[in-house]
Length: 182
Image (cartoon, rainbow, N blue to C red):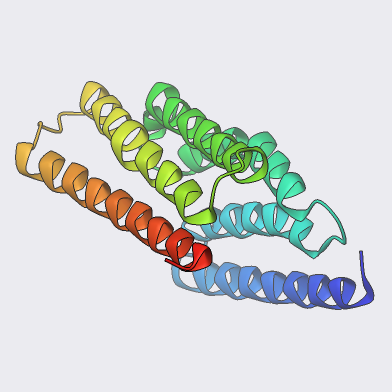
């Protein structure tokens, strides 16, 4: 960790602690027990754990992804246990968490190992997010809740994703043509 990284890490840690302490004090003052502040505390702790690797000297993104991979399921489980309906975590929350982790790792490998222009990389990530992961997540939510299928919402999401992918590919072509002098 660099000297600046240590300073920023300590500053972020201090701010997180102050925020958590304020929430705990306010929650206890209002309810005479800890209610919603437990959710804030676990969320801030999770956020701190997954962002701290960003202050490292090398491999910040890799270590951040490793932290997310290791901590997202325990975080979701704790979040579920602190809410009034803990049954949402398993199986729905666990499955969606896994889809998110897989999407993050696939995105990481796209940006690190697929040697195409960065705009094409972003188009591929947007495609996977909007055309694969998002419909899959909405299907899972419908399986475990009483949410109904909404054709309008599905079509708007898919068209929006397709439009963004198309725009990114177009901009990639423009950038290549500009580099080639066309």
